[in-house]
Image 1 (cartoon, one colour):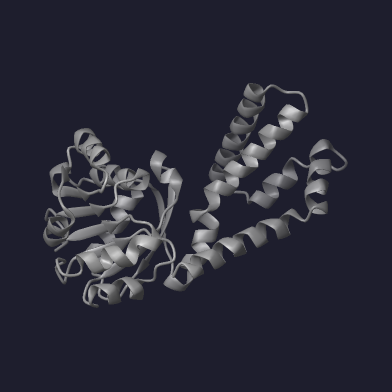
Image 2 (image 1 turned 90 degrees about the vertical axis):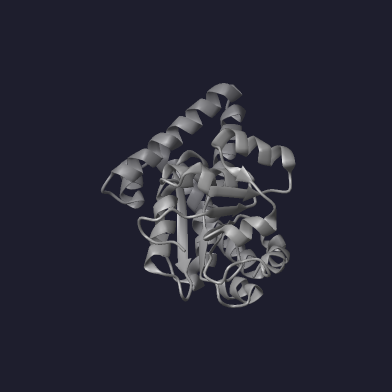
Length: 270
């Protein structure tokens, strides 16, 4: 049982890229590696993480039976099968922390028999470099100590906000899928730069550093993105010409439609 001042046993089911980032976060938050057990179908991958972090690899039934908290880092389409497999081994007070898009707390709880407390999390890939954005939703029966534990180790991955579960699909559209929008925009800028005559290397460096700098300016400024944009958009200047082109293409509508599509797909995964 998770409580302040006492060690906990943490099971991680699914040790891919995100699973590894979460293992690293747990350790950074003060969980001893010996308290972390992983279950991963790929033996080579599991042994790699055992060697890198000092965690233990155990079979799924043992992992579930001995853990005070379980991180479910599996694909949405695999969730039902995993839940049914672990249902007979899990302790009734074990905290379930789900990182799967679309899968509701009620879905998880019902597949486990209804007694386990569940916290749903939508992370994103910058978690891998400690700059992630995670949104959590707290299910019925979750204790304060359990919610603080989850907030604590997720803080090691970046920033954390709490939302009601009905907003998780919107979170998926904004921050969960958001890094891919950014990468797509970078791809497009680099490609356009090369078509304007720059080498790929130079176009990439110009684009990446410009966006990194702009993001840092936005994060550290007390001004909104709108004000910062307006500050660099001189009337009839080069930036104004580019913004006019965006407006002509109705970029705001394109972005909105893309995010609606992401939200709708998240709902379909429920």
